[in-house]
Amino acid sequence: MLTDRICFNEGGPQVYGTVLDWHETGMLNCEVEDPEGIDARRASVGLEPMAKALAAHRRDVAAEGGQPPEDFEAYKDAANLWAQRVGWR
Image (cartoon, rainbow, N blue to C red):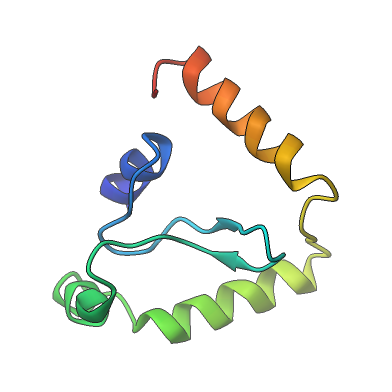
């Protein structure tokens, strides 16, 4: 999870796909390196398959009332400004 958090905060693809964020389509998702090998990498560290984890996380967020940002561009701009301010980018 730490590996993915670092990749996410640096703006790159993740290794295991553990950090989800809103996509411009309004879905929670993440960018991963080598998508074809994601389930093998996840299994090697004891994580469930990506599709199962993604579905569960989306259900949890929906149950808590989570919704995509109304202004996606402003949302991403704020995230990028934060990352720059704290030294991630």
